Length: 193
Image (cartoon, rainbow, N blue to C red; front, top):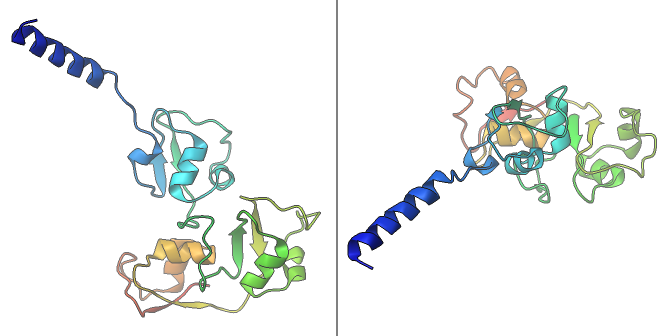
């Protein structure tokens, strides 16, 4: 085979492979408040990438079933932005809501949040059997006194909002001194509840 023929085959193969149109999945973009679904995305893939649950995305998008389609715009609820298996040692939510993680029990959640097991049951009438809670379930936490958080290095308002089960907007309303939500610094004390 001649050199010219070999070059033509290589170019043809390169064009053929590039035309197959390898499509991206949810990892082709970063998570923000709203995302546009790409071809090949799944609800579970988007949830995993964005550090949330399928149930939380469905709850934030009324009428959303189990399927998504390319071009659909989804609201991604603010929530836990760290690995669901990881429990931050200091920054647990108090008040608001909590997304149940794998291995959680109401007793463990109550101890972690510093509230009573019975207080959690009192604000969650939908829990008819305290032994049956599941991963991804959103439960209410009893309200408490105002809470403050000292910003640690590398934290953003979104991460802090996730720790406390609230939203960036709610934190901004509680802290009028935060002119720019993207500009917080280590050691700064902000109100989170």
